[in-house]
Image 1 (cartoon, rainbow, N blue to C red):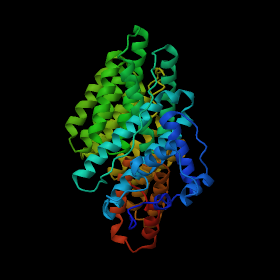
Image 2: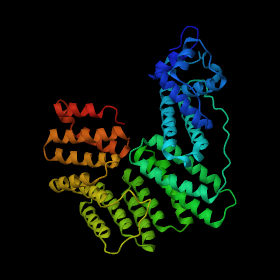
Image 3: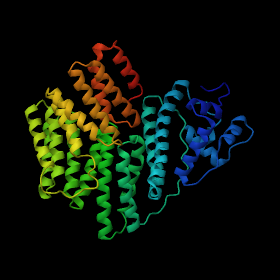
Length: 456
């Protein structure tokens, strides 16, 4: 990995990542914008000159290059303390984290002008994460001994004005849209940075109105962070913390439905560990909040969650009864107030819950019709939910004895997960692949394995 002289040329660093010279220039531009909100004029020709030694990078570019390739700025061209194995393993970890950072940087453009208030915090979140990963790697002897260069950031002093709070509210709406089709690791960076920004703002002297709006904002963002942590990134401990933060914030502003949503999401965590009674207790607590502010769709969602928990607990009759209650609550004649943040449940998602219950109850024909109808109505941008529905439909086909159709539908689910990772969907897909293992030599299964390549 290192040459006899202990020097790692820029070209070698670039080729190890599989990047072109233009890729390096593009990544430097993104890092410069994220780190200090400045534009740089790097291009492929400039990188080529650096590689040939025709021109030396300035101090600013040396710092950016060091950050990009995970080296100390002083050791950019003289790093001889890594063994090949350490270099390879540590490099993969840093590359994964850097990919997350750059993905988050690209999101800044999509978030618009309001996203600039998160800029410094986004970099700080990424810095903390990579340092944490380095500590873990060192404990098992895999981390490079050098440290990353983290130039000091000029943190913006934010004033808790109504305009700033409005901008933060608009950002939450954009996160919700991005959630359904964006890589979780990329979206988590601005979301956590957003929470850190609110934490600092709440330390300021605030008017009652702004304080209330900030807590309401925190409740929504914390719940989204919990969803990302649990459903997308398989980190239940972090998810529990985020949901608790959201619950506290909701109670601070007496938002009964937001509190119910936090508790409803928390129920999934013990359910995943087969602690079904504990999960049902969370749902009961959530329902008590809804009793204080009746809302048909929220009650329907809580009943739908119960149906999944009861199904996994083996209580089929209780699961089917919960689905009936969910349908009744959703079709209640009294109109429910619209909730901008409650975008993860409707009659289509209810059909997905129902299809899962019917599948696990052995009602395959009914499940096939329910899931097919749900897929037809699901918005195109709901990539993650589509993957889950497809996995369940694939299992229906398998239970009905149609291996080819089952593998074909599962392949469609894998293609959806290539677009946006989703731990819940990946778990369902792994279960399906285990179920078809007896036919591992069948052409349909081999084709499926090609689709599965690269799915986490």
